[in-house]
Image 1 (tube, rainbow, N blue to C red):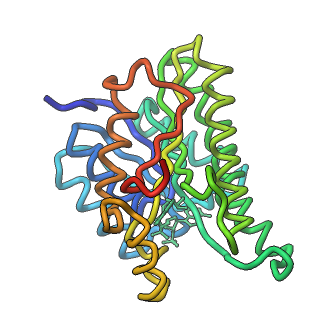
Image 2 (image 1 turned 90 degrees about the horizontal axis):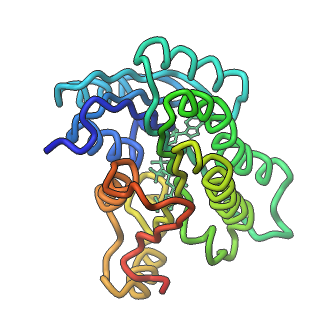
Length: 248
Ligand code: NAP
């Protein structure tokens, strides 16, 4: 059975990493995929082709998720091209780490804008579409540090905590109209974002994880599929930690 047959999923920042894994998983369950990334370069085009090869419609759109106007324009284009938006995943994200007193205003603004404002931008543009459909599932890609905080990541942790507050508020405002909103809080997931960490730090992280390994983008995609599909039709306003048991 295809859990998302004929649905349209919009995933931000999905040319690679966790977003790409979600796109592939959703497509393998029959969803048509619109994804955004800052630029649609050769890598993004390869992602588009890999997804389309699963027999669904897929198109990548160049769009800066942090830009309110661009977001509304791209959502209009996607609606025209795909005819609906059933699932929105606010996934685009960056890190610019540093201890609080060393953090620059630019570091703070960049992370809050790309991670949190982008989720507002896309929700603001997509919720009216979902209201017309009287159904929709929104998934905010938060982080365990949005729940628990993390030294040297006050900007990133605040942005990810904000994404949880945003999901819960959308769940409360629009639940009566058939829209569900949830957050996933991944732990230490092996992608380009974490590749830059030293082997020592990676080892330290893994020692704290009961399952004794970093997660994969596919581990996140399985949970996202649950939240995107009708399997979770009575789940809204929740944060699901996918972290190998690191935080209990
Ligand atoms: P990643 O490999 O760095 O991918 C992030 C994606 O977001 C890239 O495709 C990137 O595009 C895109 N992006 C960045 N800024 C953008 C913008 N302004 N507009 C549109 N797209 C933009 O990261 P990841 O590890 O897959 O992370 C995906 C999400 O999961 C992020 O929100 C991250 O915070 C969250 N997360 C990750 C982990 C982890 O351990 N990896 C843990 C918890 C939460 P470019 O290719 O152009 O840079």
